[in-house]
Image 1 (tube, rainbow, N blue to C red):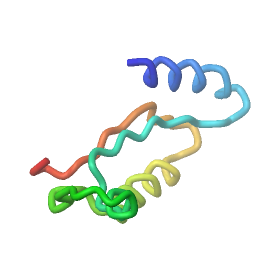
Image 2: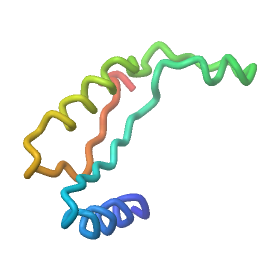
Image 3: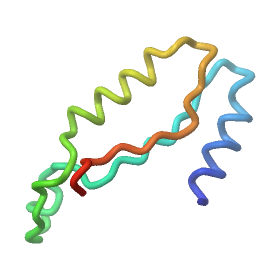
Image 4: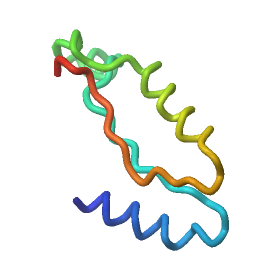
Length: 78
């Protein structure tokens, strides 16, 4: 809830400058983070980072007068 409040407040503050703010909340993502920390974690149901990148590209490509305040993305099996 804290990040939603912060995102909304920031969006309201900077909109007058034409700046858009989006709170992107990805679920578990398929990365090497746990391997690098020597932690065994099943990442099979993580979302591919390319899907998150596609979502961010979609947000960026929306018309400049449209603001997407928040969006969550995750693997359907997670």
